[in-house]
Length: 621
Image (cartoon, rainbow, N blue to C red):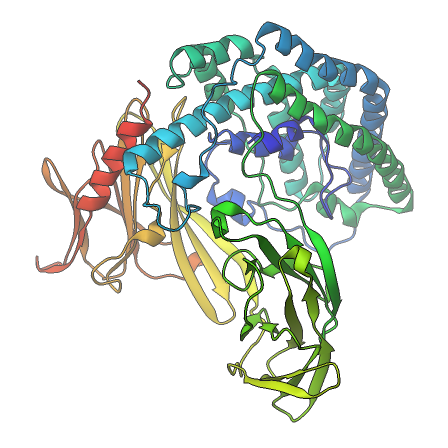
């Protein structure tokens, strides 16, 4: 939400996608997602899979060369123009906090804060909130996000106003361009359509909309905010699953083009420095209207106490920081983070979020070592004895590796000592740890859990196809999409639903993974999702594997047979998707054979009652 707010008006570069990226387009979608409203139409099968196949490897035509050169030249001129008006854009944005601070100072100072305790993060002993309480919290969060989205749009409008002539010139230059690979023009036109839609949107009256929300007791959005949400939900979404423009254009570039790209990159780099400084204005704008800092911002990285190199060529770092109280409770004084950087440069924290190993309430005993398989790397961690100075790792082939331990001083919650090692699997695998003192004498030998088959799992990009296009009661269109994931030789299939509403919210409180049918071999992936808008509806769906069987939903009007749609062959999954939409949630699903026998029954009464209660809390007063 707020921490993404200013990205809509910033050309922030992402690794591998920094150059020749159209202003605003992909970044605006982040803001739309933060609003809790759709960023555009549900992703279609063609969009996910790539509507057009990659262009064959053929000789580059003069037309492709000319179009690429025109594209790069237009982008370079655009960056020049944006740099020229950068002082005006900055002045307009810098004036906004003072203006809103004068019109509605601290208007949201009394607004309910984000409440993470209603989610998964809650201290031990605290019961899960009721469905109605979760609905109320989600309604407040969505409404607050909508108003934050209005603030974002105000920033976007202020920053983009001086740039509009340059944007119009860029659009005029790019629109007629064509390539042999049709995906390039499709991607560019989608980006331009998103920019055009954003610039054409009405700038909301933020202060009036915020005052209206406050006057309603933080329960109802104003008509202006609802109109704003309708505009956002109608925005065109770019083809996110297609290749980037820069990737598609590489094969058409020549030496002169690459020189022009470097000049454009230099201009973008200069803008990036200015834009990063402008990020502070987002916090200043939020403070002007009384919004408190978000609770979900990342905590401090902490104090580095040591690190080293692992057997597989990676690096590790040990840090100690103040704990996240909501995770560890009041007794935890210090939290230990063990960070590991793989050989390929990517990094990840694999120990330190939860559990006794990462929490230091004070001096304490050692703990048993753990062995984990992380994408083909065998990761060994242990909290060792206070007198341990080094550890010898014994491997299955008879070899060993000796490495020192990291000490946590008393001022940071110690004394405590930690050991970390990583090696490539699957063999040789670790067998035991021998803890040694300062003189090399054995203090203790610990046997390790044996992991003999730790291999890197090859994960292929998912295949997605929209299986169902239908309309819910009240006229809201919805889709059901199937996803096929391949992990090595294993393949998994899942379903997801998506609805597009105007001014409403599609709030599924039960995902397809939560369904627990009586006989999964017959009916699986049961999903029950609801809209809590002014015209509520429920979508129910499931993956039916039994040939010739049918699924019926128990409703107040009796049993209703669900429609069926065949799973596309591209998803490598047999069976059909049974689905239906109803004004009220069904209480049961019944699977019947062609001869009328009941094959399985799924009781949905608890989930239906919870869903109804959730929507009661979610509804505006």
